[in-house]
Length: 401
Image (tube, rainbow, N blue to C red; front, side, top):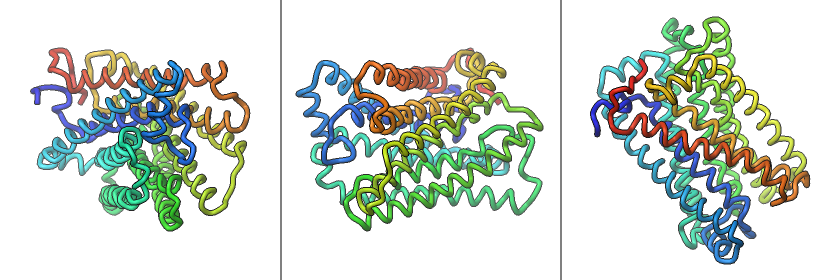
């Protein structure tokens, strides 16, 4: 480990470096999800992708090659930074700084750890679909283990949330309302939502009624827990922001609603597919389009709010392109990634299926270019932040207090 790198002054928020990389692997999977034919399964698998690569046009071959490279690269980075964080967090727990953290508002930053664990399970599943031959033949046997993993991660998140709420709601006066002037306290909701979306995957992919039922109920529990926590954190934080203004260093958290909408939206789509395929509950293409449009609208509104605050605080100049560093900068990656992913769903599962757009038409590619633009902007941001925080020590890097 290089001495005096910004990352050496550890914060649990560095788990977001792993989360962001995992999210980017999903943005590349969107190419395969919506451009590669996968009849017989709700998602493309290795055999579908290889067949499309062998028989497809030059454009298809290029898209698949980029997707393969992107997924491999960012799943590797996801796991690399997860392992680094788990080691660093283990050492951090033995320090006085951890004791101080546990006694402050920032105790909820610990929830970045179960968030990262859930993201890594999702990223590994994507990598398995794309790179492992014949995985679909045994996938039914994997679903119970996947749900067990997400249940364990969800319980871990609830334990940490219970520690925090148990302290601040029983002692009184220990929660600093003046420091609640951001959406940082929505991180627990993010962790619960990531657990929920992972738990919902078998509902969309399994043909076993019991597995689908357990997936639906489990994902609903963690999804509702996420929504309730997010609502409480959002309204109390906005009240504090009106009183005390927003915090410069935590300004990126104002856009945490964006990934929350994507994750909960994908969970709802997976649940709807399970209800349709297993329990004969049907929804129309138009209803899905409007549902996704509402989520995108929420994302755009909170994105605009966040960008205004970042600009007013001069955040980009200070923490992204300047000499200051903050582990919270990694919170900027999730909104861009999430908007890219949800736009792909809105375009393909919404506009195309409802007949508003013709797939692979000029208009289709113009709109899709917006999603790809967000994606590659976040790729550039991740490499920039990784260089800032994990690169060789710089005489100019000044970790923010």
